[in-house]
Length: 125
Image 1: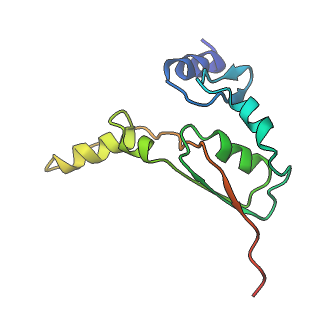
Image 2: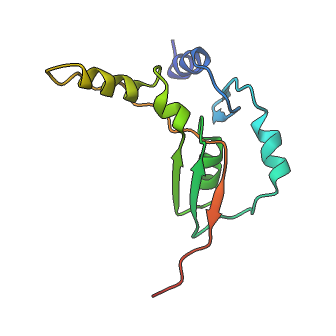
């Protein structure tokens, strides 16, 4: 099995909110038509020099889009993804709390995104 076939299988096995083109013909099967939503938002074509705070991030579509448009810093957060019992980071901490020895780290997870807020660059001091 080729690496792209392995990646495609892993992507297809996950539940996605956003439809994200990951490249090389791999697109997440999101329940939201995120590219259409993006077209309707009329966001600036460049975020160069801006910081972006993405609250309610889900799968990260808008966070990655902000990065693609040149944002100098992107912070994404989502309460649902951090509270989910299926989140590997949360499972790690739940095991740590209930154990007398440190559990093995879980695999990393993708930070996700649904809402987007940008801020203008800071004025020089």
